[in-house]
Length: 107
Image (tube, rainbow, N blue to C red):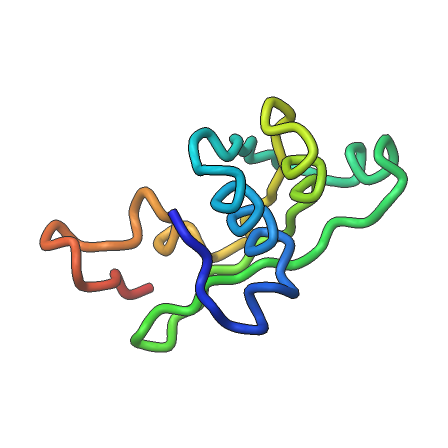
């Protein structure tokens, strides 16, 4: 896995995590846990979740909030957490593409 060579990748926490893992030789990058509510984790970590998104070629956009990516850089055994935004289930990575693997599903 490699991060895109683009300024926005350097700004995004996930891009920073991918670049860091690539620079140390690759391997296990970390893991993620989807949760229904991030506020208990925001309180425990003392910071707010940040938005994330993925735009598909047809203009559809998967959005979420995440927390803990920078901790992932420090220790890949600690998960980062995310909450998928409502109404984006059809774009979830496990369901986003039709059986041909190329065509994004429509809402």
